[in-house]
Length: 256
Image 1: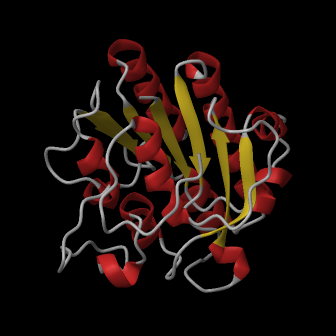
Image 2: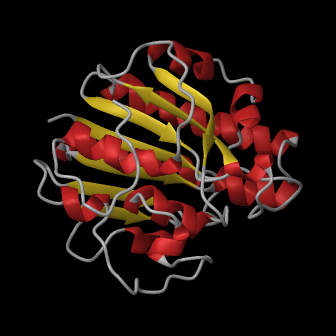
């Protein structure tokens, strides 16, 4: 069994992460495998994308096609449900309240929520909470979600504007903090849920549907660029690393 932390940086485009000017982006590419052309699902909207991320099926199967949660007509287990008995349990720290529904009641041992506009740098505060919990309890699986790139960067200012790029760089600084403290203990996976254009997202445009991913850990080849990757591949890959059984309905592939 490996311990895993999945970090989702909302609305992070590949050209945004490579163009934000943060030197740790290049370091992530050197430390592990990465892709700059992974594909998300349609509609390229936050809740549908994260439901697909955690359940490894497209929206037409899980049924969530807007940012409003509706119970699945044909329920299937997601990553949290499959991994809830992993040694150390599961933890989730997030800055957008509707994401609470990516896990079912009883599947989390630890969680923390801070509204994204409660402070100037809520992504940093959430990272602090996750790091403190990892230091104290060492959960087997941790999900850290950062939303300021999307809300305060993309929607408030526009994708690929300087404020948007600055929000990405701040998020990458938080990733660096996780790696510096726990890179020897945890496999670190960094992803986006979707991209964006102008001040919106949700379309089939490449700017909205192409996302970056980074995989840092002993199961991944340093410096290797991956292609043909889907957001559906994240949950099967993480389950394999954790040593837990995949749900039979999952459609993605194991990348490790």
